[in-house]
Image (cartoon, rainbow, N blue to C red; front, side):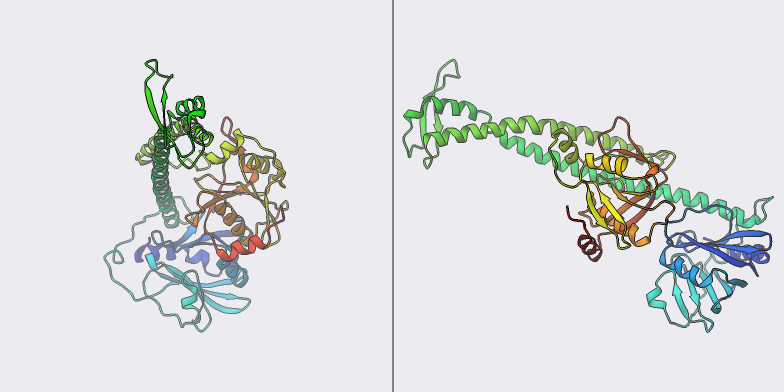
Length: 480
């Protein structure tokens, strides 16, 4: 983040271009970052204000920012009150990491205070009498209070000299160097965060797979005890007339053994001879089914664990880069249960897809399985529709039908993301990250299982399963 001297340099540089400018557009590309497009005769500049704890800063930027389809509530508030306002002054307060913009708009004079103070960084809107009208963070606790600047501290960092000398040839040399420095820093942080998230996911998935393998091995071990029960059933079958009701065993000749020994077969004294025979055959079939189903399942899981461990080694490597960036799209695969369903096709007489209506009245479709995911994404959905999926985990495809050229309402986005989370493996945790993009940026993954896709140009939203929202969606669910 900028120290006092850095901020002083930036303000000296941008003051002539910003003072007297008109705010023509406001964007909020992330939760704690704002970009003001300001206009002076002949020029438009982008003033970036970041309240991110590790990169709090203010400077002019020439970089385009990716913005959400619908502006967040704080951005909507700023647009309603300050688009078209004039910046009368911009100044540093008490030689600290605090900048105040004095504005004149349609509602009179007001101030925007940027507290670029690390972890406690905030942006506050003040009335003419300097009362807090709204804040980017902690707005409920601060609303209506008389604004008091944070206590000035004199740490070594705050007394440090300016670190940026500027990039020659730029209209705003100091801003350009700061912009480039934090662009690289944030890219590094994003990779580190993605790496940490992926490592955590892989370790959790490996642990889950190992638990499954252990459970399946236990089931197989129990079923192995029934391995010889088919022989017992045949021997009882050959001696049904020799068994009396209430017998708890029978002595028979084992003609499956070339030595023809006499063996004793335990019986359930409460059951008939036929009932005992059926029990032995049933348990033997259970053994055969376990051999047929569990052994391949264990081998597939072991292979999957090996793949996950190989990926974990790659992710832990110093040069790893996240594979779900647009330059290297990520493949999302369906659940094992869905794959099993595709191997055993059934006649489905239900209406295709789960169907809901968003709070804004827009239709939302959710696939039930791999076949429906394919049909939904590559059959029903149009290129400009919104497509969603829980990040990094098996789950349903979700599509929101949008009119061409229309913006996505924020509540609809949250409704659809909630459904993507609900119908995914993240449901148990109750929270997680959901990616979303336009349908035109979703491609079928060649050679992959049904439901697997390649996604580019995605954005993400971290969301939890809100009971009130879920109940409202349930009440608006279409009858199937």
